[in-house]
Image (tube, rainbow, N blue to C red; front, side):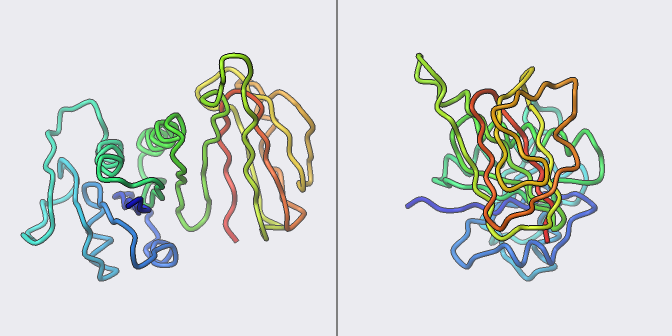
Length: 220
């Protein structure tokens, strides 16, 4: 049976209250490396812990399944955890504890979002302050044309918003319900015009016609 996965990372800036608000009773919980410390603080027993434990001690709880990884490897702990979640039937991912701390780790987690978007698996990073998603229209290319992908944003009027190409030179988008609307404009990776926008309607929509876009939505 398909299931949603909450993946808890080990960023020092993790907001455990935000994780608590996101969780459902039937979520599949994976902790990446030291993310299990935050789960313990919430009184959560994860379904799986994955990591090389270079930033935390290996947990002693023998009840929880643990996959110990080598320190020297190609996949990050977060990416490995995502791949393991997919193997176990997870069809949606929310990555927590994935921003803040080392900037290269945060960027690597954005790349993990793209890994999921490339496989048409719904996913976001949520840190209590922002919700980050990647919309990749290029993976829906039928061979003749790319099928537009849209993302609807409900009841977020007043929230800040940014959109940029990700993993590509450019992307073509439209924005409806924003302070700075757009109608079939092309964003390029060397001109960050998508920064500092704001949602003004309770029904807003992002359309991506081709390419791949990262969107950053401020939480209320």
